[in-house]
Figure 1 (cartoon, rainbow, N blue to C red):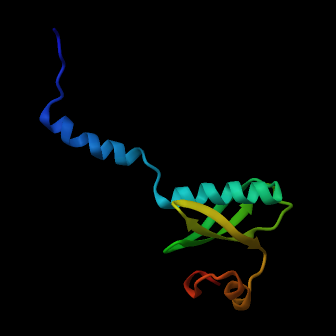
Figure 2: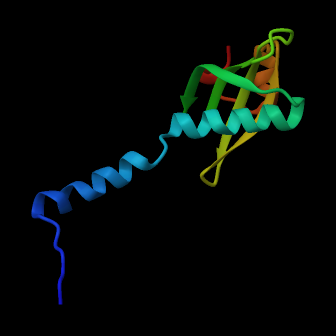
Length: 107
C-alpha cells in the first residue's frame, strides 16, 4: 500500500490556510450590506467608511450608477448573521435612538 504523508511543518500550516480562506467580519458585513440595499432599493453599490462596533455596523453604500445618491446603512449582527436595520441619506441622533443603535455607531 502506498501512503503519502505530509511533513510535520506542512501539517502545522494547514489550520492557518483554513483560517485564511474564511472571510473576515468586515467582508461579511460588506456583503450583507450589498444584499440588503439591493433587496430594498434594487441598486448595486460599493461600500465605503465601514465601521463595526460590537454587534452593530455602519457604512456608506455608494451606488455604482452615478445618478443615485450614496446612503448610510446600519446593520446588526443577530445569531452570527448581519441583518439590515435601516438605510437613508440622513440620520439624526433621535433616529438612531429610535432604532436602538449605540451612540458609537451613529453619525
